[in-house]
Length: 529
Image (cartoon, rainbow, N blue to C red):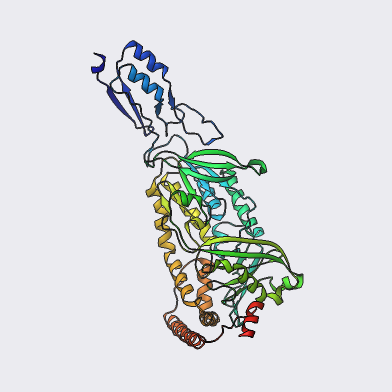
């Protein structure tokens, strides 16, 4: 009888293409065979960018995610034909380490320093790379400071650097000014850049090296249950300057999330939440004589009037200054802190005109999860902004490059499939190299930014030449500089003495009004107390 005819399952392993294919053979009746033939089987192929309907290619053209699907109607026809079993399953999967007959395909979501540097490294390393960025003229509220080592390490041209800062003033809550930078040599400086210029250069360089830049906004990711199928990226395409995005999809092997503190990639992989600061910045064009003062000088203000847990800044740009501040603990008062920062710098910026206002969230610590399957987070999306200093540009670019290097190495220049273990190589290297830096700066922020007396002690310590040398050497070259044991001990004694005085001042001030400077609101509060 037809129902007793066995179904023979033949499972084939294609060693050359490293793809699974399952075929089932059976001997139904002639009528059943005709019905089965009419049930069209679809070969699903891998399309880099689909604008609507799914493109179909042969399995020979794209075997990496190839398999066969039989429609529900086709399966029903087989059953009606008397087949005891009719199972034809698509296996859209490819094993980690499997050889590809096409370049590895990677989507980088976000075109800031982390995303652009990742895309450049991937494209140069033999991977087919898509860089998706919505705001091509993005002006992130960022001080724009970059260390000297970054210029050489990332081959940055001088024309994208607005200023070479060789002097810095640390200004305490009592308006005590300490000049910082006296240990710098003539060849050492801190670069100041505008993010819209800096980011644009990095994106264009990635494109020159082969990355495909897409003006789009990523909406969501869709991954397979077993984690070995293609990752579908849903995004709105804003090509040719359109204000209305066109929904599109893209299928890739790997995704790098470089889409900032509000990362949608992080949300889709359940990366976990973190505390974040609000950074607020105003670009102010000031008269030429006042701009001359800031030609190679940056200022940092500390005090509970400008921020309860961070600092205010005045950083020079090409033809204006950037005045800003940030906070984690009292985000709703950010405009009040910004006004206080402007008041503290009022004499030196008087007559200025605000030409741009910017605000953006800044992460405070790494996310609990930074890699899942074939998806990795870098830059602000991963939480790589240091406490105390608030530095993020270098670490963003570095993390993007390191993640891309791990993918290129694991895929043997785009020839093999990578998996989570390959992406974790990047995490392991990152944590070994920078964990101590983040931890030390976290401790410094908790110790010195907790009260005005502690901030006074911090500024006092910054006057020490040994402190300046150790600080600038570590910042400029991103290395832990070994100190002199005797000088380290002297520094420890001075630090403890400063903190003891700070605690004594804090205790004495518990029943008095906090003294803050620069803000008219604070001056009125002190006057009426």
